[in-house]
Amino acid sequence: MSMDIVDSHIHLYPSAEVDRLAWCTEGHPLRGQHSVEDYLEATRDLKAASNQELHGFIFIETDRKSYLETEAGWDEPLHELEWIRRIADGEPRSGEGHESQHAHLCLGVVLWAPLPSGADAMQRYMNRVEDCAGHMLPLVKGFRYLVQDKSPGTMLGGRFIESLRWMGLNGLAFDLGVDTRSGGVWQLKEAVEMIEKAHDGLPSDQRVTIVINHMCKPDMRSRDQNGNPATGPFVAWKTQMTRLSSFSNVYMKVSGGFSEMDPLPSEEEQGDWGSRVGDELVQRTRNWCGHWLGEILTAFGPQRMMFGSDWPVCNVGGGGNRVSYMIWWSVVDSFVKDSLSMEDQSSFWSGNASRAYGCV
Image (tube, rainbow, N blue to C red; front, top):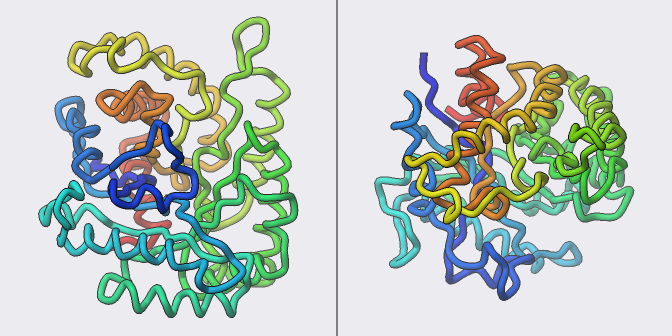
């Protein structure tokens, strides 16, 4: 039984295009090129540490500069499609950090889309996506419009719901990005209502598939006086996990933990993966993350969870590119080996992501 990995959540961008990113200011720790070659460097110890190999990844849009007022605001996200097409086609430009032999790794693409603008705008946007994607259009598996930094009510707007229903009819997944820790639990409550409205009255095969990012970014920093997760934030998050998992066609990415935890030691402090100062670190991190991973498993079950690295964002809180991917993989690997059957482990590492995104 294959345990090869489909990484459901990575970001890539070339150095020549960092100024096109809405968030990438001077001095940002993720400013600079993050390429396929950099990603493969982060995963280099995977095979030696296990019997697993990287089968491929789902590319997730990187929040490029965009706006909704006119179609000119769509240009930068479509320019991103041109960039990822060069990877998928195996046609790199000099210095972009990928080669023709890397083309097979791109299993799917989730692009930005103007969901608040409604179904007609989504269709016009899709027409431009088709023109830009060309023969790689089948790799476009879904869209994301980040709501974690938007005002209350954004997800419940009539046109937003209309766009989600349009996506379901067109077989496109929606990546849902909400933020419990920084934004508030209200975002999860609103997401529940959003899914209710988007699925209402539709047969199961026409309901949009929702793939939730990063466990809804729970508060993994607050502790009580005994060092356990703070009860209030944990219970509020847990309650919404139960509600979100009650809908069909909803999946959860086990990803993004390092952004919500206290930062791990730097890679210089940890040493190389092979020297494993991190053995104790992995176990300690596993024990802490287990509070949240266990609730995800209880709510969603083994057939609606999937692995995601959130590379390169994981490098910021996870110690750095030489260690962060492998620590997150080790934490999650330890959990799934303790919790899942061999068949369910295979689903978690690759099958669930392939099913949710319709990968061949």
